[in-house]
Image 1: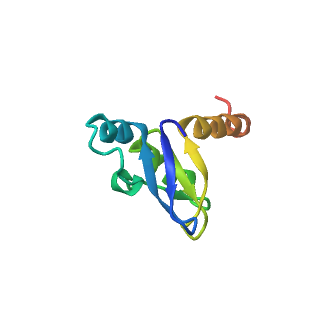
Image 2: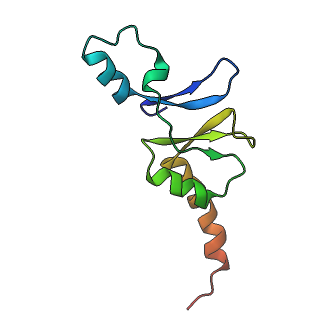
Length: 104
């Protein structure tokens, strides 16, 4: 998603991400055509599906483009969190907050 792919092992466990940039750099020199994905996998910040949005926002601040979302055990990838999804969730919550705000 967004220039990166999740890397999982043979058991389906999350290992990190492969970015388009890292892949392009590795292939550009012509010496890594036979290299394994593991050699350029990056350990990216991830969040768990039960984490608070505040935790997710912290991870998004340093993310390449999106943050991997892992199951509650932190092993399997269940999705991706993007800035757009957080903004959409906040926007949906705004009318409720605005209705509860006292008028001045």
